Image (cartoon, rainbow, N blue to C red; front, side, top):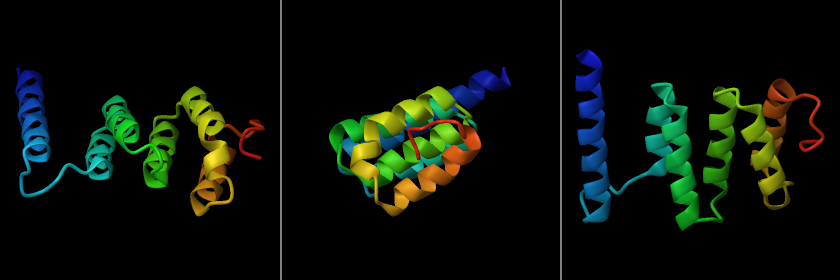
Length: 116
């Protein structure tokens, strides 16, 4: 019964955030903050979806791409981490974010050639 109440609360809060964003509420929707909250709760799939949706609207944002790597790292999802590396390496190489991604990669997938 508690799980249903918690889920209902998440749905109501999520709906409120969406409506505030959609209809010009006081605080616009911030995918980085939203994903951070999901990550803190261990809801990595929700965090991923939040960032992927934001990337579909703003595909050039490096901070969103880096957050995606953080999500995959914290959820220990090697396959998605490497896939993102292949997809975004050309855009991110030479940036501070790429150097941080390489550091994460040495722990998560040390044998990967994608991040070398």
